[in-house]
Image 1 (tube, rainbow, N blue to C red):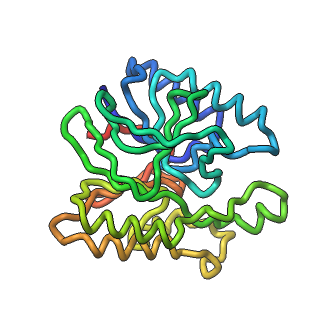
Image 2: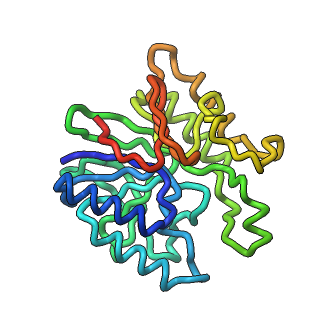
Length: 247
């Protein structure tokens, strides 16, 4: 059993094809996992195009791997209205903890913000703290064009409090988030057409404070997506197109 990781997919058929190709090349099964660091695109269209959303989920359900999805900013949060229930992954699973799951799509699991997950990789056991969400820099463009924008895209104050509490009370090996601490922002990837003074960086500032909260010798490795680039450092990994194995 292996645990892999990638960045934003946005429901892109080409990306899902590349994941399928990856699975075939690595001979994965549904005992293996793919962590998606937000903006997966499985809960995007909703009532606007329910058939399209169901078609995407049905195609992803054919992949020989389990999807573990962090909440992004360009997607709805899973809800009971969409058929999601809370269940617990335990025992034989490489990722253990409470998740949201729709039994119609058995290989698609959605992480709960503030939950600590026990992840068994091919080499070790990791405790991972999850917190999704981010600000959409294209918010006003989306509203003007009638595209989807989700008011609860960023973590609430309650969620931030829960995440802060978990980080204080339990040892954390890795952070799984959509965006990143302010100090890690890849400014070289910022869009020239966006006035950065208008961007709400409250989630990034929260993560920065959280990072400071960890003792100097116990800083977790931070994994995130959101910025549409791949970057590897000693302190964090940012993913977009790349698929890596978590070890």
